[in-house]
Image 1 (tube, rainbow, N blue to C red):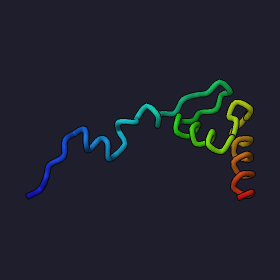
Image 2: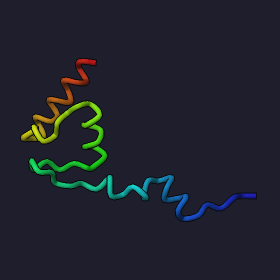
Image 3: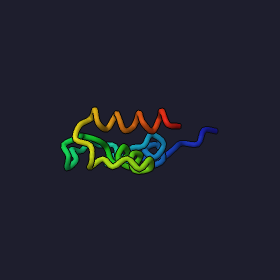
Image 4: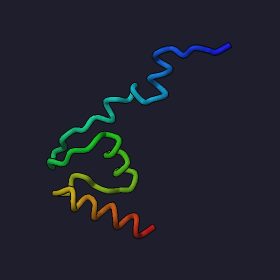
Length: 68
């Protein structure tokens, strides 16, 4: 016997319940990132507000990756 899942259970599995956190948003400095991306940057102490461009942000990410 197959146990049918509810719509809520299916949405939870594919991440639809957190859709707001995955929407692109333009930040104060003009960069467009999701809330999840900003949260991940925060975990690595990358201050998004100090980045003036995506190139600068990528440079800061590379410094952390290369330093590991």
